[in-house]
Image (cartoon, rainbow, N blue to C red; front, side, top):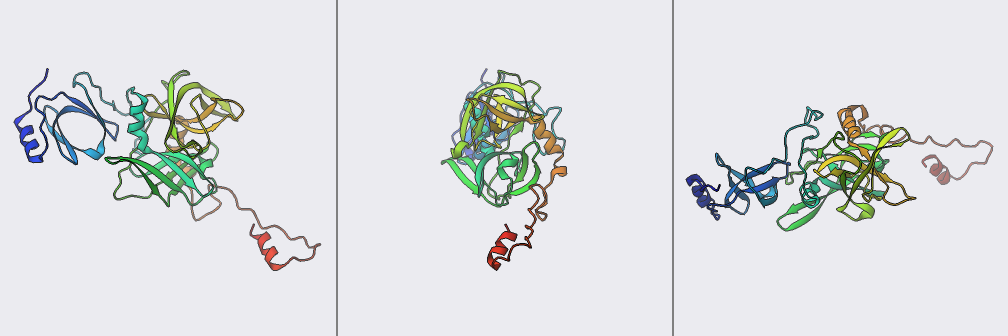
Length: 333
């Protein structure tokens, strides 16, 4: 049953200088942090929307709104139903229970948290974990690199904006499970979106999934499929197998379930066949993040994280000495 707009709402709408919607139907407003607000829009302005919750009136900045749609307060369920038992107590990464939604809405909501990773030798993908700019990618995407950049894709009132952030910091590396933790430098004028980490408890073969990444440099590509099997063994590690298209450039990107929760990190495909992609299960990712200090990268020590430097080659005393230029080149190779 519709209810009339309160006097306070009318006054606030008048003060805000926007149009007041009397007897408006409730709307469901999806926010960047994964939550929803359900209420009547009583006033709109250039930078904010004013919502009547029935017991209070709130102001929501437009840049925090992902989408809006008609709904009713009695039937709309909240996106976030509370933290999971396996959530991180420190809040470093977010784990919560989301609801099923169409892929196009999930891509719009969480697409800003998916980033492109660029290094001098190649390109990959990644995803942001929290507001501080920490992100996950594959170890092999940044292996041997020190100059790393991240490309963000921001939804604005003028459309999608591509933004490059340089000087990305390496935080932790685990080559055994092909995971890396990086950190984007703070941006004063930018609020980062982030993903929610899911669980494998309710994931089964045949369940729908989708990947977002940059295959072959084609930025912000979305591919959809199912879980082919959730326990494919390669060299002692278990992987999720999916028929969603995975190609070079997808590496390090998220594999989402149909709730928008990350259930894996895409990292490889079978080149001899079709629709044979693989992702690192999310439980490996959570273990890596909880124990990130054990895999921390020391930028002042070139032997940590990547590989040991090759020792100088020993000169053969039986052969005549070469020129100084060629000798120097051999020793520093």
